[in-house]
Amino acid sequence: MQPSFKALILLTFATVLLLLPFVFSPVYVEVMRDRAIELYHVLRGELYKQATGFAALTFVIVEVLLTVRKRSRSWPFSIKVPGSMKIWRSVHIYSGVILLALVAVHTIGARGLNFNAVLLWVFFGVTLTALVGAVAETGLLESTRRRFGTWPGSAKPLTKGVLVRNLRSIWLTSHIFLVWMFAVMLAIHIFLVYYFA
Image (cartoon, rainbow, N blue to C red; front, side, top):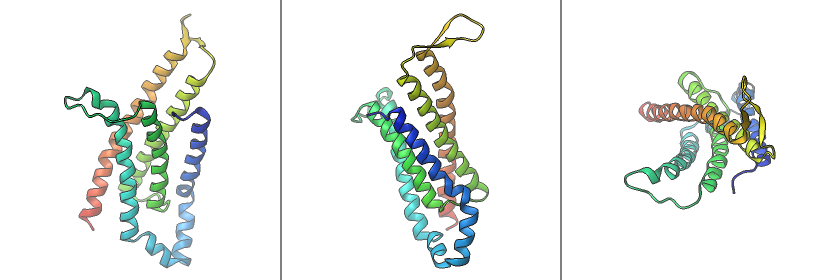
């Protein structure tokens, strides 16, 4: 059930396509302001922002469920969450790409200003570290090669397991750090939205 390397490559292309609105938003947002002011006001309106924001928040909660599934067995009050880790990892990966689409819809592709811009870039970092790490790790695991040369400066062989562990220590650490930054910033974002509403 875990996404294959080919599926992850397709998800990478989907992610690139989902990031394109953020690249071109300075152009089309201005056009929308000039030529479709009613549509622009609907997309910037409170109802649209709340609906899309709560939809995105729902997927953030789904993303957090992976952590609950992974860590719940070591908690004093063990929570039994059904399903294997492979299924939950797949859910985590696919819902992460869906979350990126929801963020594009929520922001209409606009990069935001000040705090919202930083929040968006941290979210992009979360998404990209996860996707790059998952693609590289899956590519290594699906490879038919058993050895990948030697360690620099030694004759010790570099095996698939060693490479995956070292790669995971880099991408997963940076991903978790960015996830925590995103969680704190998201809480602040939600507070500010409702405090100044």
